[in-house]
Length: 114
Image 1 (cartoon, rainbow, N blue to C red):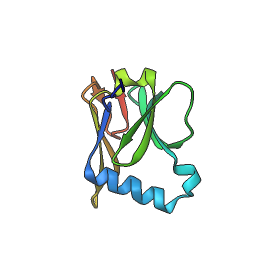
Image 2 (image 1 turned 45 degrees about the horizontal axis):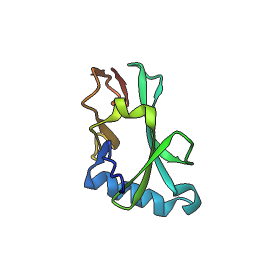
Image 3 (image 1 turned 90 degrees about the vertical axis):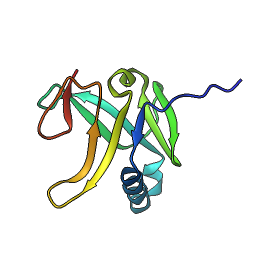
């Protein structure tokens, strides 16, 4: 029996479009996996990680709209249910993280506390 894993994060249509654009523009060898994760730092204690990377032993792999997404197993508790959007407005351009697990976030939008 095949195990179906629920994707811990969701991407909006605009985020998917921008990620696929970046994959076409970058060296295809560097775009095999898109890493979503967290690391210590930032003004609120933790910072989001979003970028192309190589798969590591503790990573889980998800396929989201044809994009191979990797995430360290331990990061799921921080990211479960998060939505990643892409804003292309005049005042703000970039990826936006909407995390229901964050107890607080800072003004930059890429740092949070649990």
